[in-house]
Length: 122
View 1 (cartoon, one colour):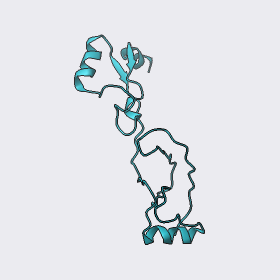
View 2: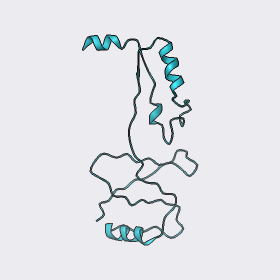
View 3: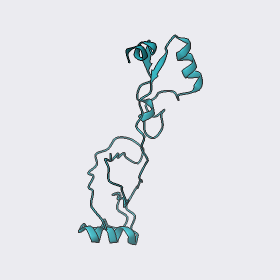
View 4: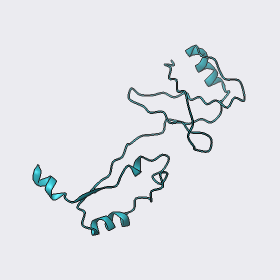
């Protein structure tokens, strides 16, 4: 095992650029290209650590959708629906068992404070 580790030296780290949302350039880093990887190799690096989290976006919502699907979901879970025209957001999604992360931002993509509630819905 040590021989494999030794053969990878020296190595470098691309950083968490591929974890940036919504794209890898969102944190101000350039896009990862073949030319970039070749440049790193030309500098003498034999390995590159490329951390990434693979995830799919489940859905998004901006402003309250007042359609019947959402009204039914609120009624079934015992919650109250937002008023028509509300700027609150809601999402109805079918999720497989697992670990999820909720991300929220304001309408311009900036930081915000959010309360996230999750309910089991038939």
